[in-house]
Length: 119
Image (cartoon, rainbow, N blue to C red):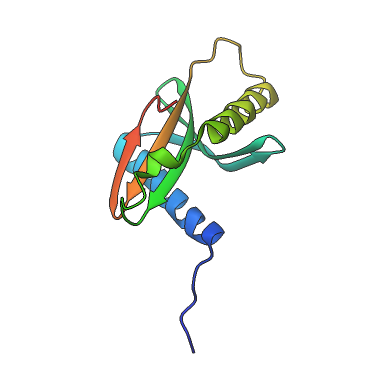
């Protein structure tokens, strides 16, 4: 019997869980939502660092052969995340002056790092 190969969605979810644990345990983020999805797009992780609401995209690459993980967050992906974040703010009835930030958790091989204010 062959081993179970993870499909891309399952792999992505595994790395989102790793990223959430890293944010929670190493950087003291509060994780509010994972895989928040609307018609406008999906946000991998929504969390808080102090009083800042953070919308976080998780990107993984096994090697840097095709560039860094964060380079895979295209302009169109950024726009989808921004639109989805606006919907989240509206849905949660958060004040207009809520401080927000867009972060990327970059996982390259087994190296993980947070890029605050990535876009």
